[in-house]
Image 1 (spheres, rainbow, N blue to C red):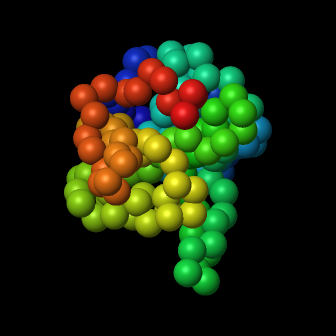
Image 2 (cartoon, rainbow, N blue to C red):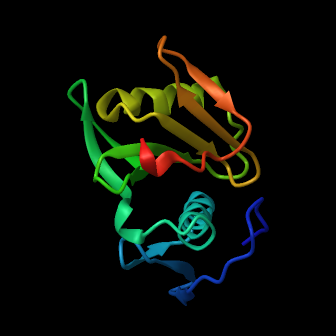
Length: 149
């Protein structure tokens, strides 16, 4: 795979029947290594290894219902009280982060109502905070206090 705009991490990767798989430490299983999964695994490594977030506070690729539709979020972070606090959307590096990407994750957030959103294609990262008047405001850096919301 290719270098992303994250620190360098070690991943367990294996080949089976001409396909590569990566071990997901949160789901505790081997996942087909796609470009989007490569980004998702870097996000997980960043959260656990760089931000020192306990793996037990991370949910990955779970189904949600929104307006009778079944959707699947990429990553959801919980605070130490078990309350959802940040929703993360991962895209493949060749996918541009647009208003449509923000709309997608904001739609998922109608279910969770978390204070922070993070979208990334592995090369570019965007972080947003929900403000009191109902808007998503871009943040310059990854929030360090997201566990306390």
